[in-house]
Image (cartoon, rainbow, N blue to C red; front, side, top):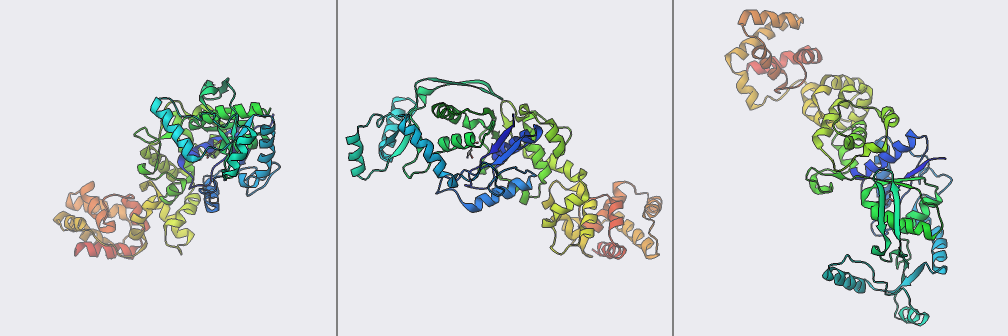
Length: 466
Ligand code: GLU
């Protein structure tokens, strides 16, 4: 069997981390099993869908390192891959359902439906459509048409039990009677999600649907449609959703939630890919690259119970990738965080110096001015430490050694230690402050090697007279 999966985002906003996770699972599943990964754009919600969001979604997916075998930008044998371009295909199946009496026109207005809904809630029962238009006569229909009402089309939900074996959650069971006749074509003529998705998944020969468990109830509706249309359903796998630390759905009020925002903050795609893939399977002790993720991927990794997004864990992962990826790779992503004209050699040397001291690329900004211009601004705090007698002594001696042309920093430090009796932090900290005005950062010997000699002297002088 040729395994085929899809990611089917609606272009109504930027790529949310939760959706990115679904995309990643599908992609890894396809690559692990040497199947196909399809990108399909579900843009039938005219008001909310925007072409620029599609562009953004595609960019975010590519940035994460995902690639697809078929999609709106690539074409493929089952296209088109945008639902708005597939309306004729849906039409054919709607007609079939109407003809077979499995679907019917519904003329209920928004207000009528809302009133029904409120009645259900008042009675304490879950709201569902009453079936008011189920058995309309031709005359009643004509009357409604005359009134200028535009009908939606509803699926006549049969009275049965829907059962399926979810690849993650195991046996699932729904009583269809609880669902109520749902809309398959809206009154504006556009197909509703549950309907379009069934036609597309069947038509595109999707074998596995992997998506968030918020779609479980939809799956019941979709299985009823597969049955009514005599189509073979795919296998389903519903993964737990990504929650915020307060155990509610991760949303804007918790901070950054889109892939784009994390990119802007200076997270590496490798880190986000790894973290989103593995956070459901417990604390990570080692990081894996893309190929290892593909090799080891298993649907079980999507998690059981609550999957909680923890920014600190992601920061830890990002740090690991910043330390371990080739400098060339990091330089590529770091370009957006340094002045435009920075040459590659400068950038790589600089990253080599600070990569262990940052958790995200945006933290470059705290180090860039310190290491890329001759002078620095000493903070008030630094100045007050540098004014202490011991500090002044260290700086003076160090400066003196440089003045005499020496650059054997280690022996200079040893001599100062012997002369002053100062050692460890007492000896090194004033120099760090004088050279960077920062309390922490790269090791002192790295700083000394990195900074041009003239800059070092300039800064020592500035610290001495601070
Ligand atoms: N367009 C749907 C969404 O973004 C797709 C759900 C599905 O995978 O079927 O939620």
